[in-house]
Each structure stands twice: as C-alpha cells, then as structure tokens.
Image (cartoon, rainbow, N blue to C red; front, side):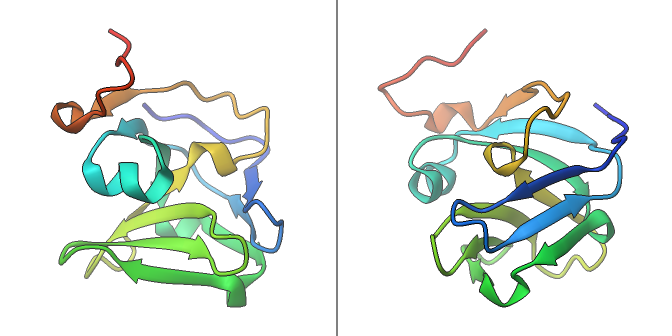
Length: 129
C-alpha cells in the first residue's frame, strides 16, 4: 500500500522529547504478532514502513537509542519514557524503517494493513478476518 503524505506525517514519543516527520510515501502498514513485538509493545505492534531516508528526527535525537533485538533487526525507543518507536533491519543502510502507528499524530489517513506472524498471536485477543 503506497500512500502519499501531503503534508508530511508527524509523530512523537509519549514524553514528547523525540519528535519526527515522515517525508515520503508510506509503503506498507502491518500488525506484527511475533513474540518479540508482543514483549516490546505489550501487545501486537502496528506499524507503517517508509524509506529510512524519509524519517527525519526534528527533536530529541539524543534520546533515541537502538536495541539490537535479534541478529537481524534492531528497535528504536526513547530513553526517557520508553516509547517503542522504530524497527529496522541491521546491515541495511538506506533501507526501510517501520514506524509505530500509535506514535503518529492524527489524522494519518492510514488504515491497518496485513497481520503478520499470526501463529504467535496471544490467546487473549482475536485477529480480525
């Protein structure tokens, strides 16, 4: 799903120290149900993907830290409030970065896309068909 962003989407962490803007098209929205995402977000993790070149930090770059969560990926979060913000593959410069849908300012004009890793879904919720 490609979605033009006019004007650019903006977002922030819970405490507001990290602020960002997306200067390009959203290429995918997804809800990840893998165990890592569940433990990181406290539930499944809905996100949209943009080219990493189009993620612009407008404030709080010193509060953003990255955690290598596997041998393939890392997750970006705020060191002040702990907000789960970003996910990206390692060794993929200029690649894609996933942005937490809940961190975006409304209105986004986006809609939930596919559900992935549903075999790991928690037993306390149902996945929409």
